Length: 235
Image (cartoon, rainbow, N blue to C red; front, side, top):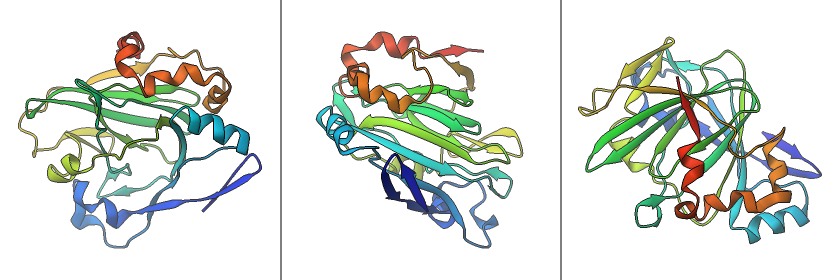
C-alpha cells in the first residue's frame, strides 16, 4: 500500500494476520492469511518538516487497520511496551484517530502483575495519550477502516515479548464483548475512559510540527506529569 503525504510517497510495512497468531484469542481460527494492518513509519510532508521532527527526536507514523475479525475477535495491533527513558518513566506516545473508531486497551504492570487496565474509546480527531509505564493495543471494533496517526520518540525500540508470553493483552474484544485473557491471573477490572484534549489539538495532529515544543513530553515525560494526570476522563 502507498501513502501520499503532502508531496511525499511512503510504502507500508505490512503486519499479516499470521503475524498476530501469538497474541490471538483463537489462533486456530485463522484459516487463510490476510493483511491485518499497514504501517507507514517516519512520515513527513516536506524535507524541512522532516528536519524539524528529527531534530526534536520524534517520529510521526500512520497506520491503516481494515475491518476484520479472527474467530470473532476484532482485528488489532500486536501490542507492545516502551522502555524506560529515566527511572520510573517509560516513553509515552500520543495517537489521533483520523478515520473510523478505535479502542485502545492500556495495561500497567507492577511487580510482575497488572495493576491497571484502561480502555479508551477514540473517535475521529480524538487524541489519545499513552502514559508512561503502560503497554497498549489498538483495536478496530467497526466495519470501517480505522486510520490512526501517532507521535513518538524515535530513539527506542518497542518491547513485544510480554504480549507474546501471555498471548496478548489481559482482555480480548470478541463479538463486541470484553473477555478476560486467562493467561493473566491478576488482571483487574477494566476502567473505561474518554480522551481529553490536553494538547489543545485543533484538526490534524500533524500540524504540531509547527509547535513541536508541545511534544517535549514524549522525550521528557518526567518533566510533564500534569499531561498524563489529565489525559483521560473515566466514565
